[in-house]
Image (tube, rainbow, N blue to C red; front, side):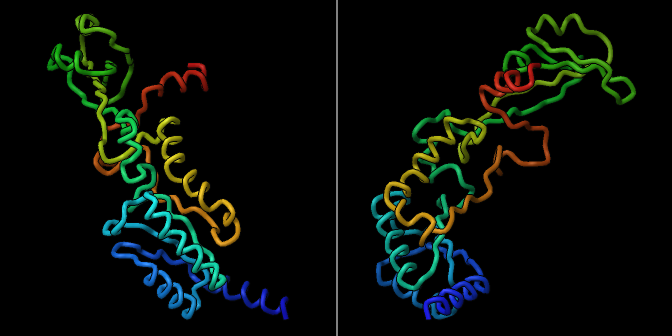
Length: 244
């Protein structure tokens, strides 16, 4: 009889979708109990508990973890599995902006790129840039490049040169996912907090962690542009790894 039940449970799990369960409103213990009853009745064997805007308790607060604890209890009661969704809304990485509040330097960074013909460049453009590179362009092809260390280097150039200026900018809505310190902060605020409270359920009722759409920079920057992902030790770590 026990073997038959286990096989039936496995078969049910194989046929079940793993839906996102949006938690975006008032969530009393009664709501949690009822929702899991309904999901179990419909044959759902796994669910991703997804906190979203509208959640009526502070994300990652004691109230949140009490709420998640009710979910773990009810999932276990119905022989279901539950997944941790590791962010409020998405993308994963900010811990509902708590990472950036811990240290503003953990904000996402990128290099905004501008290209100016040599004859149109001015000293202010050079002074405001973090990096400057000159490229000689002949018939649409780059033939030479030069790193510009000071405005005086510009005066040594003549011909069909274009000046590429790279200015560091911040994304206040996302984290620096290239920064090990920022990502360790995220793990400490989220994954480690779940581990403190629910480690005994890892691999049992808690089946997995869902991380959603992390990025090297996010939507406030854009994709179809000349911006480059960046972090403050980018060139140091590149040199350490590749020797150039």
